[in-house]
Length: 171
Ligand SMILES: Nc1ncnc2c1ncn2[C@@H]1O[C@H](COP(=O)(O)OP(=O)(O)O)[C@@H](O)[C@H]1O
Ligand SMILES: O=C(O)C1=C[C@@H](OP(=O)(O)O)[C@@H](O)[C@H](O)C1
Ligand SMILES: [Mg+2]
Image (cartoon, rainbow, N blue to C red; front, side, top):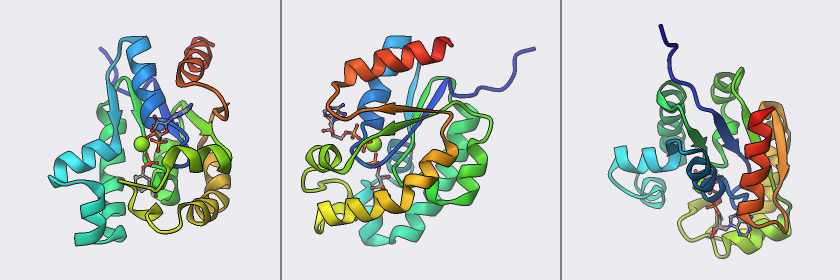
């Protein structure tokens, strides 16, 4: 009998840490499925995350995110990328216990460069640098709490980060 599916690796980290980009590259390198809870939420809601924030608000988005994370943990056997704020919910942090969770670490300068003016990221559309700093300060301990490994991404191309995680997964 085979067990229920579980992700080979779950990626967490701040917006701009590269969860989506590195996750896609990692899944391709491993030849496995790539899932991103943000994409799952958009598909189910039938609209982009920015529109969910405008039409229903952040609380509603977080409700969809908790459901998307639980569903993905139970059905994904590849690489799973989360949204940067998924770790805020205690329920989500508890659901991640026992999984291999890689924290893509990024410092403010690289994160700001990568997210630019925050297009598609409704929390960052006003004053991205200050908002990102606030979010990162608030969440740093939460990423550390759920992570089983941390990979530095500052100044490194995605391919190099993918290679480091491939090596990690063999350990
Ligand atoms: N290691 C990296 N070096 C340079 N740019 C990166 C890196 N990782 C991601 N990016 C770029 O930063 C932006 C945000 O990446 P994304 O994967 O969407 O991050 P996240 O999903 O963590 O918010 C994208 O434009 C992406 O191409
Ligand atoms: O930090 C956050 O609270 C969010 C990050 C986004 O994902 P990325 O971290 O992939 O940008 C997305 O889930 C939503 O806009 C909220
Ligand atoms: Mg993403």
